[in-house]
Image (tube, rainbow, N blue to C red; front, side, top):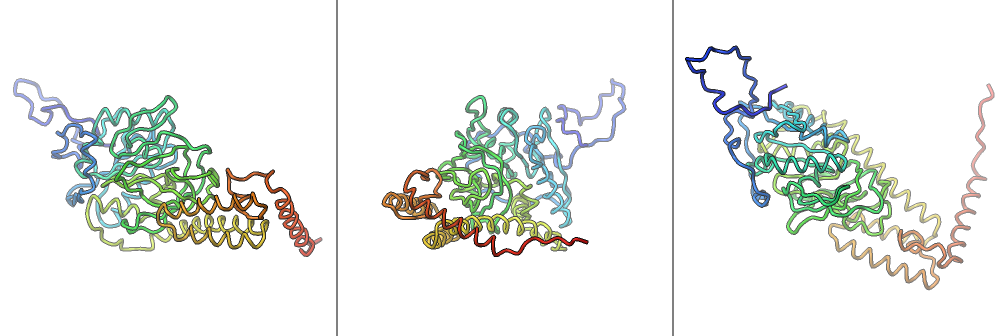
Length: 417
């Protein structure tokens, strides 16, 4: 494994004639560490990173490896997000570009000369320790100021933000991005996460899974990575929490953030294994325009997995609507159609506002005795003791239909032989 310990001053100078020559091992200096002027740079202030939106690709010299750092995998490696580094390296090699993965555990100085830094998920205590170490060392901030890219997943999203809530209270983040995680979800978000990325990024619909309890608020001017189609993501604007915790809910918020060459997301998977287009986006930030991979079929498996998971999540969502329609009758058909149109066409928070208005109208209708599905299945507004006559009638109809269907089903006959 390459030696990541910085060389002592003067170590590269020839030995003095008066001292006996000492046997030395062959130099193992990483190509990414050689003659890099950024090594002499001091820690960058957090405010210096706010200008990253104008950063340009670094155009790595073909004579050196592209270095990809896995930051503190012993602290931020709970969900296998270090695999994202392997995806990045392999996609470079498929294009004939040398790549090196540099694993940096706690206690080893983080090199400032890597092109990409990968951070994953972790628990509260390790997350707090990682933030304190990175903030004190300043290497990550210096690297990003010089044009390096960062992929931060889950806990990484919070660590490189400005502040986050941990078990012991509010902790300071690294400050690369103006984002705060200061409160938690009522129910932990565990399950599939589907995101439509910012159209500016030119990415398809993304698939992954999430497992967190944080609510991340973005500062003014910070762009979200994308809009949540199913799941929770940043958690802001989750509403009544319907579907939170099972991956089947319809998201009405956003996921992650994009600030210059820093990309944060709550998508696990690893996210780059399921969504190779995101890997190519990160690579293009540091080496410029990418040549196409000679054998495009290498992405077929990843895209097939993504299509399967997207189909399962969206299918489950439609199944939930169908079940609701069966219980509440024809009025629910119109309601489900309204929800579907809102889910498929919403591109901003105004759609969420209209949806909230519809929920309020539904609740008023229920108070007047109307049998409206949203009055029964709108999360926090659901009251089983309100309008119980209409509710009882709807459930009885559903029971009768189920009983009738079971009677028509042929018996399950097994072959006696």
